[in-house]
Amino acid sequence: MTGQVRTVDGRVAGRRGQATRQKLLDCLGEMLSSSPYRDVKVIDVARKAGTSPATFYQYFPDVEGAVLEIAEEMAKEGAGLTALVSGRSWAGKAGWQTSEELVDGFLDFWRKHDAILRVVDLGAAEGDKRFNKIRLKILNSVTGSLTESVKELQSKGRIDKDISPAALAGSLVVLLASVASHQKGFQSWGVKQAELRPTLAQLVHLGVTGKKPTK
Amino acid sequence: MTGQVRTVDGRVAGRRGQATRQKLLDCLGEMLSSSPYRDVKVIDVARKAGTSPATFYQYFPDVEGAVLEIAEEMAKEGAGLTALVSGRSWAGKAGWQTSEELVDGFLDFWRKHDAILRVVDLGAAEGDKRFNKIRLKILNSVTGSLTESVKELQSKGRIDKDISPAALAGSLVVLLASVASHQKGFQSWGVKQAELRPTLAQLVHLGVTGKKPTK
DNA sequence: TCGGTAAGCTGACTGCATGACAGGACAAGT
DNA sequence: ACTTGTCCTGTCATGCAGTCAGCTTACCGA
Image 1: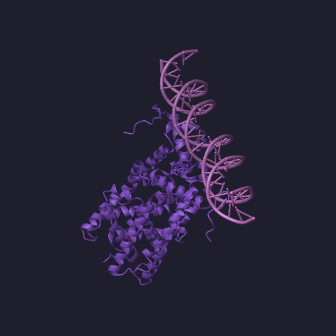
Image 2: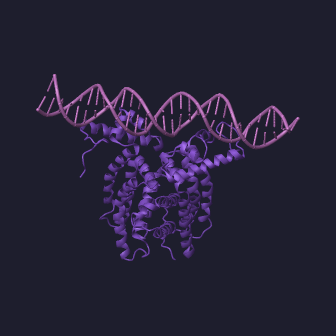
Image 3: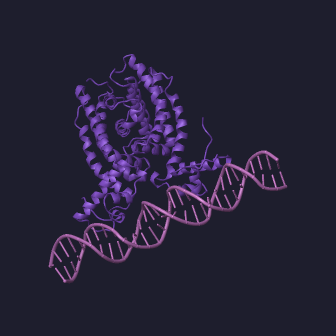
C-alpha cells in the first residue's frame, strides 16, 4: 500500500536518502513554527538541514509539496481523535466528562501541530483540494462519530428535527478547531486559558444534548 | 487625525497618486481571490494595474504592507457588525430572530471579504500583532456586545456562574467566523448551505440563553 | 505665458531564490 | 579493482525583490 519512498526523478530512496529527506521535513516543520509561511524559503530549509537546495528538490517538488508530506503524517495521528467520541456516553455526569475530554484532546492536538495546521487551514480555505482532504481527514475522525451521537439523541426527540446532525457536529468541531488555533487571540479579550476549557465543554454539551450539563 | 496619504519616501499623494494607489490595492485584492497568498507577486499586481513594480514600492513597503491596508479598510466596515447584537432582545421569538440575523450578517460579511480575511486569519495565527489587532477589531465589535448580553442573562441566573461571559461570547463569535471561512468544506460532509444557517442560529441561541429557541 | 516646484512614474541595476542538470562522491556487491 | 546505483552538490539560466537616479507631468504663483 505505502509504496517505497521515491525521489522526484523516480529513484528509490535508501537508508541515507530517507534520513536526509526526514531531516529536511523536520527542519521545514521548525521553520514553519518560527517564521511566516510566506517567508519560508527552500534555501533556508536546506541550510538549516546542513545540505543544499538541490537536495531539497530531489525529494520534493517545492515547499508546498513538502508541507503536504508533513500534513499527511499529522493526519494519520489525527485519526486517533475518533476515540474521543466514539462509544462514549452523553448522559448525566458521563456526558459532561465526554465533553471535557473531547475539548482537552482537541486543544492538545492543535497546540502540538499548531504551525502545520495553520498552513493546512489556509490551503483548504484557498480551495486547494489536497489540503482540504487532509483537513477533513482530521476533522472527520471526530465529526463522523459526533454526527452519530447527535442522530441517536435526535431520534429520542432530544434535539429539534430540523437540525442537520452533520451540520451541528461539523460546526462544533470547527468551533474547537478555530478556538484552538487562536488561543492567543483570546488573551486580548482578557480570557484566560483555564476559562476556555469549561466554556467550550459547556457549548459542546449544549450543542450535542440540548441540555445544560450535570457536573 | 487621519494624516494625509503619504508615499514611502514621504511625499504627499495627490489625486492621481491616490488613484494609482487605490488601483494597486484593488488589483491586489483580486489577486488574493484568485491565487494562493504565497504566490502573489508584486510584479503581477503591478502588471495587472498597468504600472511598474517600482510604482508599487512607492506606496507600500511590501505585499504584506498593502494587505494590511486593505484589511484596515475592511475592519472599518466590520465595526458595523455591532448593530447585529447591541440593543437586541434575547427573549422569546425576538431572541430567535436576533440569533438568525446575527448569523446571517456574519456569514454575509465573511463571504464578501473571504479572501482578505483568510490572510488576516493566517497572520494573526502566526502571531503578527498588526493582523491580530485587525482581526480583533472586527470580532470585538460583536464580542463586546455579546459579552454584555451574556452578563445580563447570567445575572438573572439563566447561565452558570462559573462561565466567563467573555469566553463564551468569544467562542461563539469564533465559531461563526470559522464556519464562515470554511463554508465550502462543509459540502464534503454533505451539509448544504441552507442547513448551516439554522444550525448556527440554534447554537448561538443555546449558548447565549442556555435555552432552546422558541420559533 | 512662463518657469519653478513637487508629484508621479519607470528603466536599469544589484542581489537573491528558484529550479534543472550533469557529474562527482560514496557505499555495496562481485 | 570494477561496476552499479544511490546520494549530494556546483553551476547555470531564469525571474522576482527592492532601490535609485532621472525623466515626465501637473499644479501654481508671478
